[in-house]
Image (cartoon, rainbow, N blue to C red; front, side, top):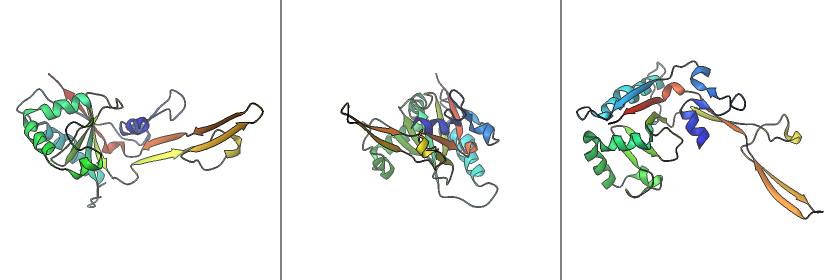
Length: 212
């Protein structure tokens, strides 16, 4: 979960060695794009800023200069402060209340039945906003991106740290059963080593917040 959150932010956790992370923007030759949403301006609809600075640019970039439109949704992973400020804005409050009162299939698929659930979700003007309470995303930021874009995120696995698996294809999980009959010791060990890669960091727009 943490590795995926970091990949969304353009970071490969310890990809080049302990304490040395990959910067996927640098690796794939892109420049990180960030925009500010001003929650202090009551007259400015924050969803209009999201539309202009994130949703439309993502759709244009995703087309890669062609007329094709892949089947994907636009989502925003929102830090808790950013999400709270968004749904508290005067231009958003009524729309959020109406959405909360409806039976939404996406919310049910995520196990969310009512406003008392631990994670809040809001679908508004072509963007699904998801509140993050894990702490894997900065509390004052949101990250807008396509969901369902083929090959955008890839997981690479390495072989187990055992001579027997040298020069073999990596697996997502290894399980080992070890026993020491002399000492009557028996145990099961698991091992995994992977790198989560964001191959299209240009399709992730970082939104910061201006708060009162």
